[in-house]
Image (cartoon, rainbow, N blue to C red; front, top):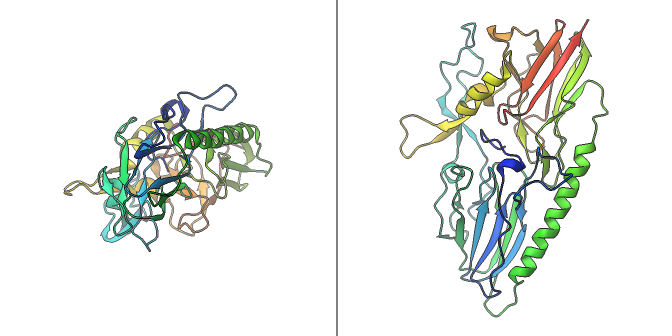
Length: 362
């Protein structure tokens, strides 16, 4: 999940790191596509949720430097512990005061506010040493060109790290003794280039994919290996009144999305961009949390999703966060029907530049 930052090729600009000498004590990895711009034939609304290269091998005492190209984090969990999740509802801090435009309270009042773990939101600072004894993390990137994140590895072993924002996006650092061979920087760059070429080829294939299921809109489509498309497919769908329409993620995608209906998606998108992920007032150091209005579904669990353009007094209907990870607490899809003829627009509260529409006819 990219959060409120628009991430496509135009916003994930980064030069492929120029290899240094083979004896360099710091190896380089790029979080996101190492590109200046989308190559010809590659969809501009595509992205690669991958580390380049996915695996590096270094000597004990050496470091790895991550250049963050996009909305990614680098998180090494404590040895023996699962990687932290992006957000954890805190029952001791329930949501309060969330009313719709008609003045009625949303069902999620009383539910825990989804807080982001500090190691994910703020990180531990660059230049730390990692042995597995404690977690280290880059924190959420500040701006489009954050400073590189560096970790030093004094102990031999193989360490797996994660982009907590994007499910399934991970890499490894293998640390070996000083007398053992490690690939040269040139060899690492060659592997990253091969990985990049494969990812770009996958984006071209995704760009041509059609949705064959009737009355279905897919966020993407995406691959299960990192390449994703920030679009809804089809972007425009026509259906009949009272006919169920499935709004779904790609199974196994590394992304999270919402399907959020609004009378004015542009204005709502700007609000979501500001509110979705924000520091919690009065917390020191600042704690970050997702707004329940955008993270939770607008309707109580088990309630049918029926839309007529006037829901909640202002035409608001939200799927809540969806993803394609079967182990995730978030659902992969929702079903909505339209009780009146009309054309209804929706957007992604996480990526507000993603917009689609559904026309219901009698």
